Amino acid sequence: MYAQRNLPLIIALNAARAVCPVASDADELKPETDLLRLLGPSKLPAVGTTIFTVMSQLAQEHRAVNLGQGFPDFDCEPQLKALVSEAMQQGHNQYAPMAGLPLLRQAIAEKVLRLYGRRYDTETEITVTAVRRRRS
Image (cartoon, rainbow, N blue to C red):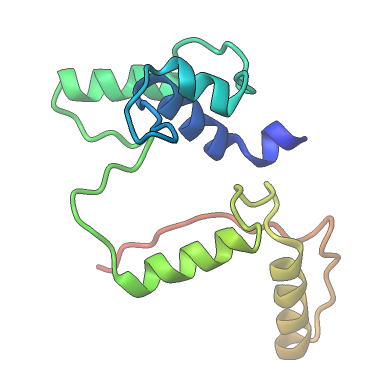
């Protein structure tokens, strides 16, 4: 469970483990083995090359847009960064459940009841999906 909830952090630590030296008490840089000792053994299973790596390489080779991962070429608003940081500090750092967040499904059910007088079961009859509609 720990690994599932903290996978982005674990991936970042494993990446850091591979490339970053650690300063000692004497402020001198030591080999990366000190970082390994500091971080402890990897909690990420030996997964090998992921589909994200493969697709990123293919997109780069073919000068294609990689829809498998986001690679923005611009910075976001400082307020958005602050809100994201705050949400992550509160533990909101994982993908939403497949059917959508329960609180959101409940709010949708309440709004539909209020507007249309129809009652829906949030567990079995409401699913939240990600959709982008283009304006014509």
